[in-house]
Image (tube, rainbow, N blue to C red; front, side, top):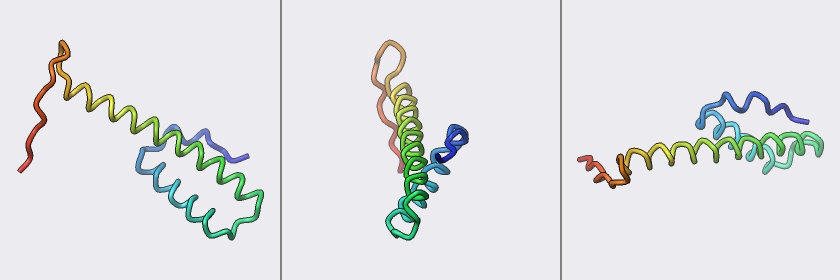
Length: 79
């Protein structure tokens, strides 16, 4: 079974890069069956980690956009 305990300490970017590598390896079809299963398990854990990080980021942005008392702040314009 693939080790997944270190995933919690990865940044979103690190986890995504590793997930992309795993997808490439699985798509190549070069890994033996047992190794494919192990890296698939790790990939699933990385995907869940990325989704959790994205949800946390979405909630942080929502807090910025929705001010105290539920008032919606105007989005900033960047020129």
